[in-house]
Image (cartoon, rainbow, N blue to C red; front, side, top):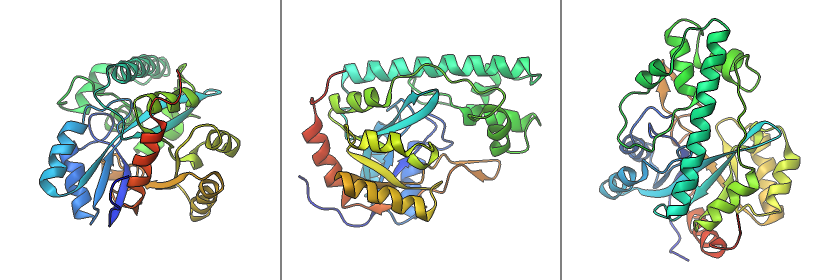
Length: 292
């Protein structure tokens, strides 16, 4: 196990390699400005931003934790699993992430079709234009990109309004594609030599699921998240204690769109960096331990 680290870490941030607004270097700069000693880049179903982030981290003296946020689902509800310290060059893992991105692309196309059927004139080309420049082919397009076009065209007052009425889970144009199970997401992370952490459990409204996964393969739970109440933070910390898991924290920072910071500011939720060696140890112990 590596030497215990000092300081604090934000273990859940996004860049424009998925649906964030800043570059990986921007996130490292913001981590330094927030007084963090470590930050993780956890883009949706891609590790495309990690190389830039690692280089920026070395230059800034900030530890960058290799991460990813894998999309899975159960009973039509999106469940996200964070992976840390995977072998991000593993061909099998990269091909699996590509599968997930293909599912996401199909979801986006169907959601845009549904929006047009409802009278909202919005195209994929507009969404891609709003995303802006990309530095790597393995980037993803997410609902925040669609939400911003809806705002720009006057169809929604804000990103939150777009999610609430149109593209969130209770929205008129929401599409839930067939995704892998959370257990499969955990297995894929383990097989790539990583540690698996359940993202923002308070958003699922299903603590039975949280406890099931806690007892059947998870290495940690993101107890402290920008959308968690103090009571939820303590509840999920208690679950990690009961199951012997690692409690993590993350802002889920996506950047700023139209003056709105999506989820929370980078560094707004943080955990002691001493948890990083615990996650590394979990990753080493889990590596190769599960099948597809």
